[in-house]
Length: 317
Image (cartoon, rainbow, N blue to C red; front, side):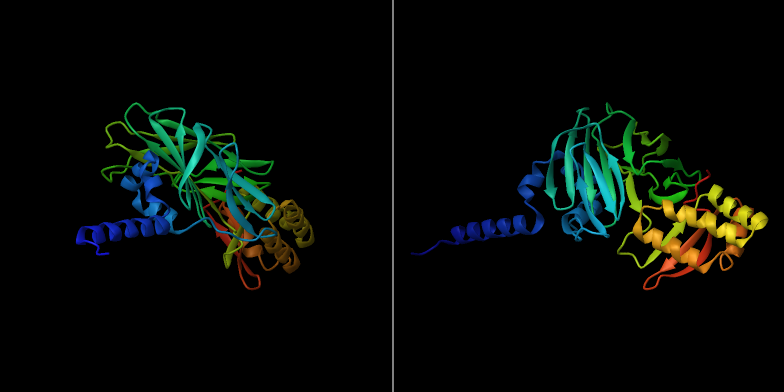
């Protein structure tokens, strides 16, 4: 049986389309997803990352585990015994996964859509603002261990997450962008454990995309890690050393270590306790005098530790 030229071309086209669907995560589904279409237009680099970098699969245990979207639409990050999440309560429906690293949602407001991007290093909520009728304020509950707090840094609007005077992670500097590639003014504020992003999108070229992105300081795959103490704990360690001696200061440090839930961070703290205060006291004193935070930086394998003075990611409490 002879096959005509047109039939061959049609067959090749169909074959290539099927190959693309397999390689790129069913573009037919993607084409039907309006949130994905908007993201592709505004932030194609994030879409490409979601297409090619699926959620990190690491065996369970005392290690980082894959990000999971739970029924309350909270994208949770499990690292050792610490669970941190960022939720989108205004999302509606069961969600759609057009790409390996992306789940999209419609919203209770028809002029808005949402997406969760999940990779091995970041948990990102993407807000898609479709038109001028959309709200300017968006609320995201943050889940973290009991006793955690949120604080907005003045210099770049990074939101830091602390628990028991110890740094857990942060929500990166806010940004928003419109379809013409223009920066759209946006800011963060916090109310308790809720992150609130304001996006001043009046006059923008729609759609607009905004992005709260949750990052952790001490993931298990990183060779470098910092244990950061709050200003108040830094001062407490220093004042104890100053008035009660090194042994008493070590006890303050040990008490702080015992409250840490993340296994890797706790290990760094225990190494610091074993080393005693003497090797860190100069940096602790400098941090206390500058009203900044003392941090212990660790390098693997080891850990090899040394002291730092931190202004960034430093709780004012």
